[in-house]
Image (tube, rainbow, N blue to C red):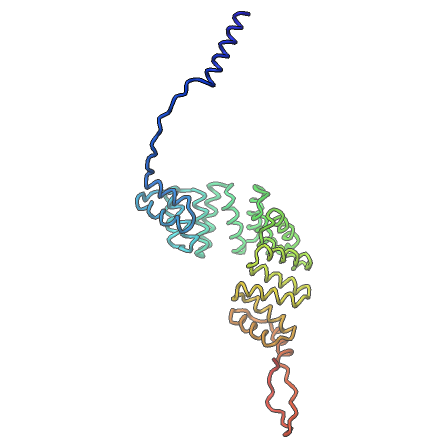
Length: 337
């Protein structure tokens, strides 16, 4: 017992000593000035947009083979519209670190901006060969395959992506667009609904869902989705245009006209909005305004169907009855306003 008591006392003493022992003062370290190159590199890699570009350029003048900085500068320049220079830096980054999926994906996105779709496809595929789980590259590949008319391949890539990440709202939104292009409207609505459920504040996803609902004849649901899309993003001209389509299909012509006018208020050079508004105005007998929008749509490359022109002629170019006058001469006939 005495041995156990002594051992307990020893532990207690050691415990107290550990908590309240002699405090050793550490010498205060003087802060050292940061290496200017490291400071520039941090600014390049961490700052946003225009502020980062000058820092990246300075780093590369001092250290030309910095792969991360080449990658960052190339991506930033591509985002800012400096496409050729951006591609040059991304290609340099790819040479410094071959097979990096992030570099290859960003190179593909920048090549796509330049209009080099084949180069972009090759880059996305190389990125996926390097890392089959690279979600951004697979998403971009799926979208580009749809844009190039390879809709079945697009669906396959997007479904592979969603198998990997079922909660990816953007993946469901893009799949809905592909399914709509394949003519599978109900499946497109189902995928679009999943996108909206996962990301309720995505105005574009709601706008697309509203368009598919309109095409399916479900106009009440379409209007609800499209009104919400415009509430979320009031400057979204496409959502307003799609709302005009939904109101038109619901035969709510005045509301449709207001929606098209709203779209044109955000984007004046919106060819189909001008044309559709002109058609609505013809039906409402507002001829002078309809002519202005019809002419503007033609300037922007829209070709009116013969039925539209015939309708305009029938409603807006009817000959007026000659006015009675003392001479009994009817005078020159004018088109009605």
